[in-house]
Length: 301
Image 1 (tube, rainbow, N blue to C red):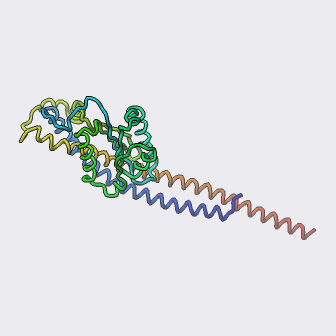
Image 2 (cartoon, helix red, strand yellow):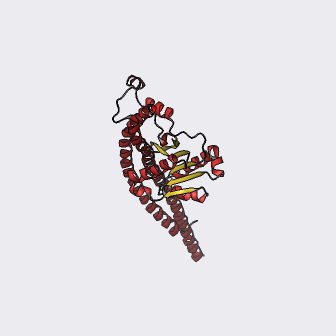
Image 3 (cartoon, rainbow, N blue to C red):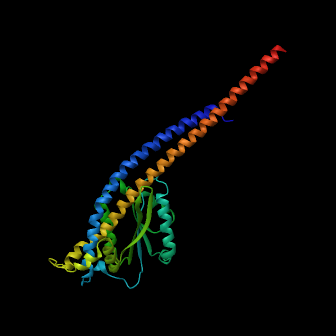
């Protein structure tokens, strides 16, 4: 039977751990509310931006570089949005495994030829893919310590410029899409080249298709091509910004669920140790009584 002092120490340690996990759960819940508010506030703007860009793209007649459709894909860029901190369950590993599976299934030829490059956002993503010897050209650790649109747009503008000058022929974004507090969707989305048909169809699905058909013409000032050149980069920046906000909200939800599970597991372990402690204590008392009785009988004899 284990020593009573050791069991008491373990019970005390588990109680302290339980207090820490409770506090972390409360902090994650507070951060989750803020992250959800930012994510929810951004969605109407992103949706309207997509609608306007879809109309402009459908009427576009220019040779704008961001609208180029490569005849063949020679080099691919993959932006992976992870997290800076751990203790959030399978949030990171589930996404990273999905990315690796996608690479093996659809991008293996580019990876083997050294024509697949990664940009990682978050400390965990950088450490994971560097360890596995992927070609990581940029890392952004500590990104979520000061989450802002400017830093996100800098990354996307650099990727867009590389696509426009022909360095990359395809750009993907992978992230955890917020579904509920306890579940996320792993998303790998190709943002460049822009699929005009997909952009238009998604816009019609998001809104009223009949209204979209009824209102078919706008007068643009100065002209549609000029407006598109201004709005298309913003639209691409919003794609990464939306991914970062979704990932941030998903991370806080995953951490809150993980800390809640850890707290419940600590309670169960505490109860188990208390039972073992009582059994050990009862065994010690029984042994002492037996020794007293045996000693008294020996004295009488």
